[in-house]
Figure (cartoon, rainbow, N blue to C red):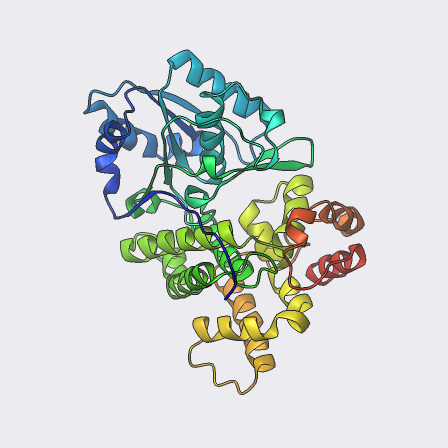
Length: 384
């Protein structure tokens, strides 16, 4: 029996319409002056007005910071922090995708601490405590509502993470009514992202454990059963709620058994070509799985049985091939680009991408097979 620890969000509410209880959750946490951290896409989609209607029906006095952007730079975090201080916020609500939730995590910490952002990058560098924090995802992808990580852009093409259990929120609300208007391409990319979280958690070389395995498998089952419906019929509330729960469970899995080479090779694509994170993962996923197959075939075979329970394969190798084929077909079915070239990546950039991927050692060490720079280049070439 392997020893392990498992941490996650204290309270998780999985219910369509659960946004309506937001004010009560704030009050139970002692929040009277929340700062809502979100982005202009949420404002434009009319979702922020739904949240504000709930808040304004209560005695809470709220302020809004709505300028979070994808892959938020340090300047966004500092601007949101200033908004929290000006409002004298006593709690934070992160509302949106992973970027808004990651920013909200850091604001809840920095607004309650003398620590500087530059001092807390890395694992367990946080010394202080945070304000009460509620996270509400509007995409079924990142699982940020149950992860102890916030990722920030630190340079033109580089990112850094703050990793601490202090960042886990008090409450996560999974309300699929907030995802009904999500465009099909966003539903597809974030859904594949969540499936990658589950696959990499299940095959992680470090901290793999029975709880994460259980969550990863159920996450994959939920998402495999519902992603095509959610993409093709975005108004299907049951499929949307199942995707939210699946993404959350995948988040819980990889928060405790960390992701690996798919993410390591995806990050440079986002940094250099501003490809959305979920799509970056999707572009390299089949090729990383083929590379890993020699080391992870028994585990991939188990996941094949989850996604394709009637696969008819006789051997673990056949099941691994079937799993990779299924994922390639799924990427095509949900309408995502299948190659780096289709996504606008230049062939001459591949060597730079491979070099940058090697900077992600915190992820690469979790891969079931060691990845060299020449291996990374070969994977990018296969994906091109």
